[in-house]
Length: 152
Image 1 (cartoon, rainbow, N blue to C red):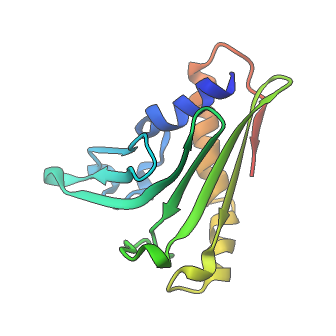
Image 2 (cartoon, one colour; image 1 turned 180 degrees about the vertical axis):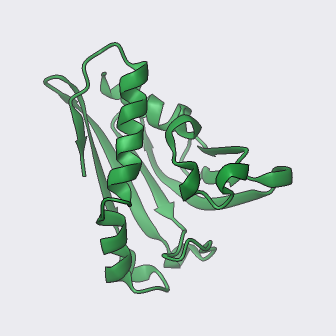
């Protein structure tokens, strides 16, 4: 899969692969997505149309780079203060067998919770590795081109 397709899959098909259990609404989740522009919201809609914003797009450079703030605390409560949010950046790069996706999550010290513990939790198998595995599996199911993999 080329970087353009991988980038598009990440953003345009977000709700097809993002783990529902990693949303505030859980099984009642109606939709989840990323608005495609700098300043756009990362959001979810839950029961009765309740909208919760969990980040803002900080970098929009298709098909190479996507960045957004992570306004979710370790206990999964919303963090409405942008200065207390961490940052997520993804790079989509051509690779020999398709595309390499690299994710960097930084700035954990800005969260109200213990930043080091939060970083460890998201680096653990049930954190970003699980989330990115869901993305990769969804890409594999929909792609006809070879998929090289993810790098975190």
